[in-house]
Amino acid sequence: MSSKIVTIERHILEKQRYFPQATGELTSLLYDMALAGKMIASETRRAGLNDILGKAGTTNIYGEQQQKLDMYADSIIFKLNDHTNRVCAMASEEHEDILEIPTHYGKGNYVLLFDPLDGSTNIDVNVSVGTIFAIHRKISTGEKGTMTDMLQRGKHLVAAGYMIYGSSTMMVYSTGNGVHGFTLDPNVGEFFLSHDDIRIPEPPKFYSCNQGYEKTWTHGVRRYTKWLQGIDGEGGEPYSARYIGSMIADFHRNLLEGGVYYYPHDANKPNGKIRLLMEAQALAFIAQHAGGYGSDGVGDILDIQPHRLHQRCPLFIGNRSLVEQAENFIRQHDQDWMAQYTPYREHEVVEA
Ligand code: FDP
Image 1: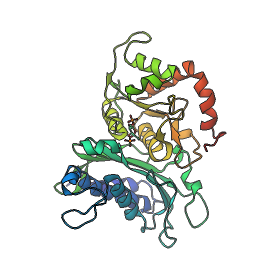
Image 2 (image 1 turned 30 degrees about the vertical axis):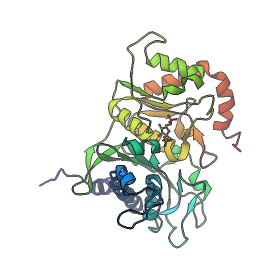
Image 3 (image 1 turned 90 degrees about the vertical axis):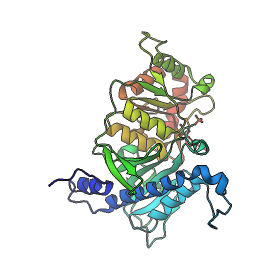
Image 4 (image 1 turned 135 degrees about the horizontal axis):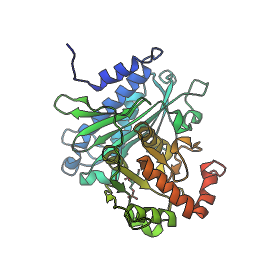
């Protein structure tokens, strides 16, 4: 008798069978991230009650100290991973420096980088938010995890994933062997395989960007957007616009429906806004293993050699054809910008 009920634990364990040399460390780390997702999802569902039950810094009716949701998510991920001997250091979008782990617990072979709650401006208005994570193998030789372990190219990731807290909670992950999506059944508190081997559909239908900033965009990004609208070029059918303002929700939507999300360079943010290590690398890794592509407008996000923990980058991500078209427009029209951005990308210029 064979069962078709695939829990996230079963899925991770079965995938691990293909790697006889696997120790189970990565499997357990992914499972810990799934647990973090469940805990954050549960708290997210109560977010609307914060005004009634008390906000950050106050005490709720149970006498417990309440935290803002992003701080809560941040501390849950840290606390679930700081004592397991699976990670040797962590880095969070919420903290300036590496999060060190006491040596007796920090002997793991991996570093974990995460954005605990992406799209945080959407929390208070009940719109989907998410958690993004990336896992690199420790490459430094000392006992502790170091900056060298954090500043690795995305193409060396061993795993990446995200949780999205929307109308349902989902966890999507890849270890480089397909992209798999799981939906949380809140009644039993378990993630079940709902989207096996996700491939970004062709042809794409949507584009997602904050067009309110068009005034500050470069010529290339404007022309690209006009092309998406069917105004520039051969005047094809327009793509439909969808912008939620939580990158994870926009990315997830395009992953399942086909489309491109972009947060480009502009006059105010010439090096972009999205964090390379806690956001862009993980999503570019997922996109690549679903048949898509992530670029900074110049080339593959996964090829960029990071030079600082909170480095930012422009991001164009989704169906390969749409992302390559963005690169074409930028190459043709944004030469001045490319001249000043490329040295930053190539690490010839280090930010202050
Ligand atoms: P946020 O700052 O709310 O966490 O990653 C940063 C991000 O959200 C993305 O999720 C989102 O797409 C974008 O910034 C929103 O920024 P704008 O408000 O500038 O559009």
